[in-house]
Image (cartoon, rainbow, N blue to C red; front, side):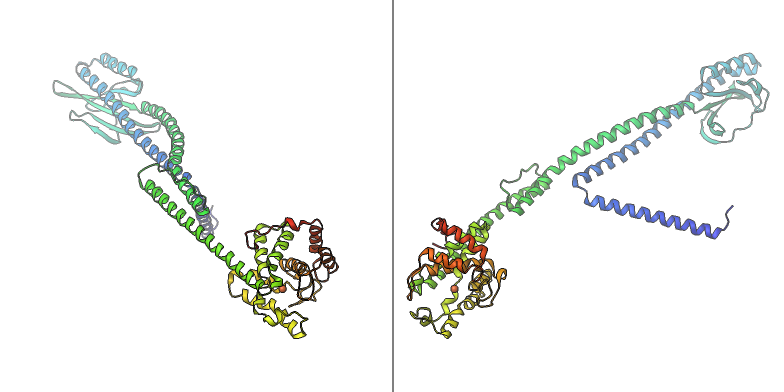
Length: 485
Ligand SMILES: [Fe+2]
């Protein structure tokens, strides 16, 4: 009993809404999965679906055709038997030869297992003989059912429904000497048809399964075959993007895909050519840059005969330190250029101060100190030189914060500036100056050791002293790319 129709309707609606949401979510998930699936899967999936649905449709059509054929055969056989009985029964019926009629009915019934009953009725539809003896003498009611067929000789076929399924009742008129005497009535069940349907259904199921398995296998092969050139094209694009493309892709066909591959090969060749030219231009630009840096460094050093070659020597010592510290090659390249640029600001320092033989006044020394800021300012003119500003600006900072221009302390001083600071000091001490002679190497190293932790970064001093004591300076790389030559 439904307690409340309104609440039942509400519950049903909410269930339906929940079901709808579930299907929407499932459809969304399947769509997402399908979008992210590989092309090979999509082709294989499409082909399997196509083959399965085609096979299914063909199976249905085949079963339908087979049903119609078998049905026709059953009915034709029933009609044939009925007409055969009717042809013989006319005389027996007229002569009231019941034994003969019974014999006809018995033979027909016993030789056709799918006949439910065989009877002969007179013109009043009274049963004269019947395969079921208890029916003899009974009035045969007019069969109610769908008229399946009606022949010109009066033979009718009706499809009747009873409790055990549908049967066909065939009624053949008995005519003797052009006089109608009665009818032969045959009831045929569809057992043969059902049996045949079961057998064919099993066979179709097996064939259907084989088709699906073969279809999956074939679609996978087909997908692989179709996808192969696309995969190679995709890999080619990836290689082109990474700049590792070497050989042109194989052209498998002369269709649209083959044309696309051919165009890709031509485009790849053009890009490789352009890339080669660009590489050459970049190399030329780099060479020009190297030359420019060398000219600048030489110009700085050439102003003072006492400091001639100073920047190159600082670069050599700094590279030795950098290599000992296992700096990567890119850093060593930057360190070398930074060394050549470290005193670039001295271009703006007046000759009267830069070349002065005597001791500098306080004002002159202050002007000399300005060279680090001049250098930073000069390097700020070109974005590609920005990275050399920190080492140029801070190579006179002291580890204890008493250097210039910013008084940076310890690790706040950029690494390159701290390295250049030691190399710069060592080269200055071991070079002749107008106001003093060059110190011996041992004395210069002693002074550097003494200033470890005050002017210089201790861990760098330790490495430097170890290298110098082993006299590694002779093995120092002259240059990473040729700047310091
Ligand atoms: Fe300097």
